[in-house]
Length: 338
Length: 164
Image (tube, rainbow over all chains, first blue to last red; front, side):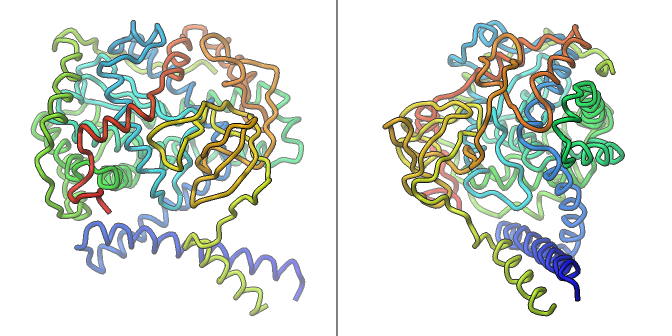
């Protein structure tokens, strides 16, 4: 047998075992968390995770955190432009400050969540973006939120009003952060483009190809369009949304927030917007389906009532929301020029 | 062939279980990969920091502890999480990403997208105001403040000591 063939076998053995190990790891963690998994559930979980792991390995190979940085900035500027740069505490932020207020409050919660993600990462998680996570409250009554690659998280005043306490705010942020952690945005880039990307990123003459800056910019444009279409208009796949829900619930539990908070905020979404076809309702599986999924996964722990200090600071922070009715409705999506 | 396959399976199993970890040896030089990284006084995410290091800064390994690396930067010592560093030397390019963000922070040289890619993208989309993204990026919270936030809000999970 030739050495080349033996090497192929070695790679295959490694890949197969790694995939199996990864899936077992996820299953075990989820199993421990829920304590209520049946064999059928586990099998379904594994099939779903296999497809997802395959998609994620594509993203993890081709797009480095450095590339994600530029990609994220381009997606973020599109989201802000679409919302006419109308966001809460924009004056303060434009002055480069993050003094006590709503945005600072979200940054604090976000830091607790990212710490949880880094303390106990899952296989297939992308590393924390090079510039960390950033949180902005868009001035829009629509119930919606967006996560751009590179860690730019946008949540609307509309969705924030659904939260009844800090844990539920954390639930909204955790779901969005998980889209970044699990690489869902990057995986929204059309499959056909990957072949070209692979050629560019793995080519020996890569520096030469990227010396031609037009090729890189063209790919950046196309990738941004793909991500925006998925993120804002069509929504990610149902699998990706369930993955973000499971991952978000897990972050809440590790961080020390109530792991039922995401379930509760989705229930509020269901009660508020039954029959709606905009924002989250258009781009996500139905709230009821998501609740059923989360109910199975969420550990049945009993949480004490949050201390008065946590509730008080939630009320103070939410006091910075603009009065209802003053928020701007976003324009239709405009895609970048190619 | 059987032996090769077996080796693959064993090494793969160990990697899948997270048992094969490459802790950098003492004396190794590492580069800061994150745009900014706090050099922490102890191996934890929240709490006091010694200083802030910028992307490309070269640090020397003293010892490793789990996911944390004890390093020396120009005579000052502290802890960096393994995700913030790389063994590669990071060369900062001469390009920049424009207003708001300092050059050293934003320059991400190497294969893939570059400051030049973003500059071309911006010239083709003049209606995009990147100053908002730059400002967003410059915001950060002090890990000491977040530590206090955890304590006062008692974000510790259902049991004393946190959710396990």
